[in-house]
Image 1 (cartoon, helix red, strand yellow):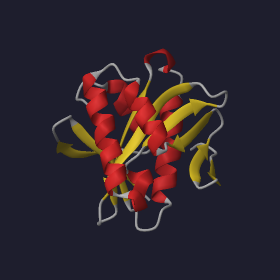
Image 2 (spheres, one colour; image 1 turned 60 degrees about the vertical axis):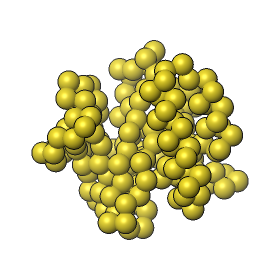
Image 3 (cartoon, one colour; image 1 turned 90 degrees about the vertical axis):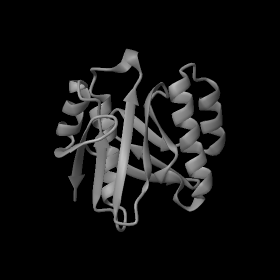
Length: 163
């Protein structure tokens, strides 16, 4: 869907799209990011990502925060996988900061991350969950090739995409 480059600079995974740079945050970056949060729910979620990363250092990119930035370095959002299941499934979550929504950044970032994930050995499916009334997020998923799974979970309907 989008042209992306996969780079590995000094051991750091970086995805580059036409307008964005996505990179897997280091421990220090995650801690610093958590310290800037004012929303208790987000702070809890980001702390869970950090703990998952520390518990699975060999799979850091499957637990860590991925920073989404414009090519000029402006932070516009983030995404994260929620681990890699032994059966080849990975769940992804994403968010774009309020002032940067409705510009296609979510679609561009999600597309790049999913393309990278499905290119990894053993990964056969990427899943996502949205709130039932979050039509914008559901459109992003559909633009990235996700289809409804018919399953309704805690946060809402689930979607998936395969190779």
